[in-house]
Image (cartoon, rainbow, N blue to C red; front, top):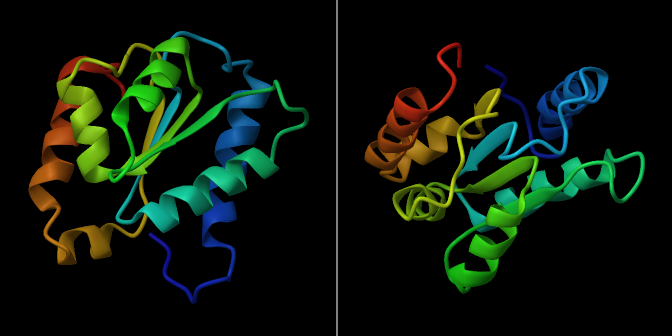
Length: 143
């Protein structure tokens, strides 16, 4: 658990080790995401996606999808079903995708709760529990 001021590099602190681990172990371009990152807001989801994208060695190395409410779900569904490596989103929209059967847990290696305290303070505890329960019920046994 890390707590620090905005702009201190917390996002990079968890994104860089994930990217490097998956890169070293050649885990990109499998069927389904290798990492899911939950965030309490659209803005933070976009920031995380931007940070992950900036860490690419080239445009095709891996894919990142940010999902959040207030936008049509159809395009997100298409991209998710086409295959993404990093799935970043707000709890409500992630839960929507899981409930619609759009999420393939087979290759999921890690799940990150960014600003978990904020998610709980905003009343997303039930959504987080449902998402983590779905991962536990459908994901790899060691996650």
